[in-house]
Image (cartoon, rainbow, N blue to C red; front, side):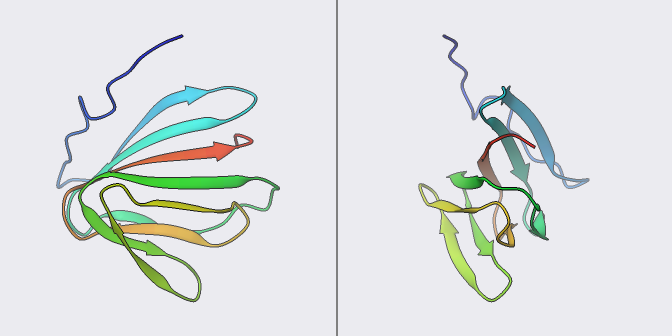
Length: 104
């Protein structure tokens, strides 16, 4: 077992987003992203079977899809097939945790 504080060291930078690998195993991958206002992950998809979750730990923004956008605020969780187009855009400083299963 291990315990890690996800918000410690999650400072944003106006020069670009910050990405931290939290966990990587044959079963799933966990990534932590920190964004300044206006930064984010562009809409993308992966041609594999599996699912992805994006949870907002801090801040506000938008979950992005190919045909719609949804508000994203602290505590919100997006779950979708990894082949479905997905992304996120920060409207304030934002910290998200992304889980990918199986890992890519």
